Length: 386
Image 1 (cartoon, rainbow, N blue to C red):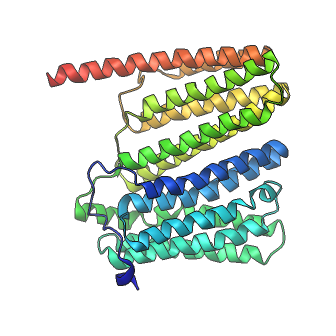
Image 2: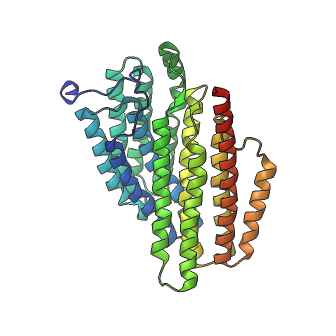
Image 3: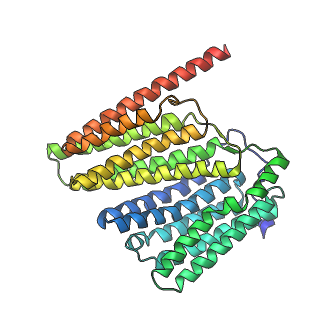
């Protein structure tokens, strides 16, 4: 069967300056639905419980995206096998997204069932790689076996009552994310043998950038959902919300656009990938709190909005620092962030329109600061090359 359907690309067959394929872009579109359903579900049933559920649900959906994206980055081609894998994954993801609203309310039974075929698909993917790719085979087999254990927990969760099905769901998710730790020794031997550096390829960084763009698009889309009339003050809030999304994206892409990530182990690379995912989740939370803020300017909502926004910006800085890049402001220490947080938190005493305006002003200053630092580094590089 594998010979008829073609085979994946070996991990040693590196495509230099690889661009994201149209098939991968098409696959990413389904996650616009996932983010929209998570956001709407939490906004409609806002509570500490729904917030916690959103984190678990996001973790599951973006684990599957994370794995499929990593697979295509290392093994992608236009074989019938790979085209089938990504299209089936998209369909399965779309089916699972149907059950997000009820899972937000802690009814996990249907979502458990929906993730069983997704887990099976990824077991098949890594088993297939172990057959085709001699170099990557040992690590791929560990990945497949780890996901088999996770599948057992998922399957058990289908047959037990709450809260035990929820516990099984969480345990299976943790096992999935721990695969890199189980496979670390095999990966170390593999990378040493084939003399491959521990890098996060630019094409995969671009995928995170595209997913971030989808999350920011949902932020703008949510503003339309909350714009119930065109009174001047509501229109001002709407404009400030769009400017907020634009300024967050400007900070993100100025830093991420200059990253070329090389680490010292597979675990370090995976941790950086998780940081990207966590920042995307923070943007989703920002979307939720922005919508809630436009409905009711409760102090708790305002504080949550500011804390999540600051954490998102801080996460971008952490990604830049741990990847040892010199593009952004390396001299910016905790004093800079304390001052930034203080200014942002003071805005909660203002009415929502003025609060959003001042937050945008702070983000504009941050963007200008980053731009100047980037221009300085680029100028130094040009002078060094000359």
